[in-house]
Amino acid sequence: MFHILFGNILAVQDADKMITIGVSIFVLAVILLFFKELLITSFDPLMAKALGMKVQFYHYLLMLLLTLVSVTAMQSVGTILIVALLITPAATAYLFSTSLKKMMFLAAFLGALASFVGLFIGYSFNIAVSSSIVLTSALFFALSFFLSPKQKIFKKEG
Image (cartoon, rainbow, N blue to C red):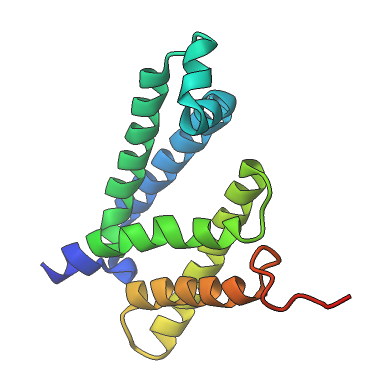
């Protein structure tokens, strides 16, 4: 039960890695193929409908992709921590991005960096690796919140 909730990234089998790689390739291909359609139907469905796009189709396609990613990640990070890994890198990237494309690349980089650093910390100090990955990602967000140009907390005066 503990591994279902919190996962065990150190116990991932080769078959699980192959499934993750396959799902990743599929999701990236679909996003590259339908990027503009997913963008407009997600942010302005009324305009997309006025342009004659099948809004429901793209909505369900996005939900399918999200479900595939969530189910695939369940083995390595666990059910509870999937949400944090889906939201935190994207929220951090939002603080520094002005376009969705830049935000997607930055979020992917931040998620990979948090995973690498969290894996190193968890393995080195013998603590739960999944939790340390999420805590690393949360630390990135907290630091970014104060350093982000969008927050203007450390704004230079005149």
